[in-house]
Length: 84
Image (tube, one colour):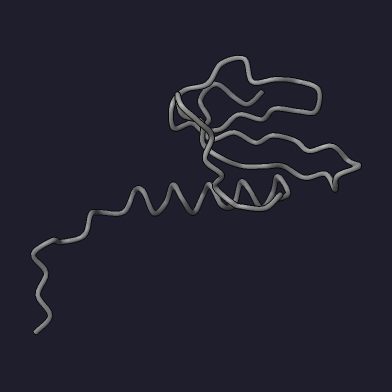
């Protein structure tokens, strides 16, 4: 179900998500007869938000999370920026 220090969890076929933290990323493995792959999204107290709106491979999902995390680590935009 994921590594303790990672920012995501993996829920394999036939398992369920026992514990989650708000804003955490989760991969839900799809059944093979429906094409396999994973649904990727974030868990919150009141719902699940898809990160990518289609099933993905684990590799593609992890690359997506790397990009999301690198963007989140960028400095904020300057709200007072003026184009001269």
